[in-house]
Length: 180
Image (cartoon, rainbow, N blue to C red):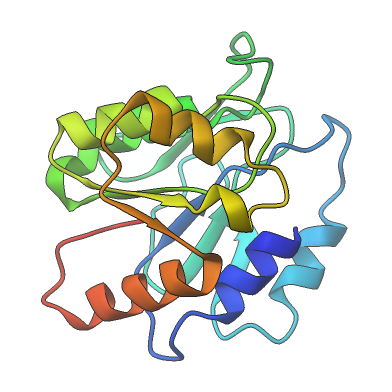
């Protein structure tokens, strides 16, 4: 949660692109951490709901024990399919479905984590012409996840949390083409 807190608080106050996050948590996790993350943030931070339309200025968090998928009509669906990389929710599932919908207009970001979840999804984003970013493993609480992505593909940017937020804030100022 510390990485998310730093990243989200470092985004420019005018940042308005939707952000969709998979955080590996216990299947029984409550939403207390989301409430704490939302407190004082200029963006709305909430758990994603089934069939919810993806809106600007909102940070969506995958509910515990559900895969979060992006549908062609740019709404969410939730799934209790098998775990992917020992995880549900899985970053790969989110990235792969979002890449199929947003194509070149998607930005995939891999932050700290202790397994390879997200690597295959980030590859799919790249294959669809999207932008790929990995946290600099030397700045991550757990370097395994960003290191896995970096070792498996040509990531577009390798940055610290603060510099990822700065890059996304700059992209946010450009004509609207990307979704994170």
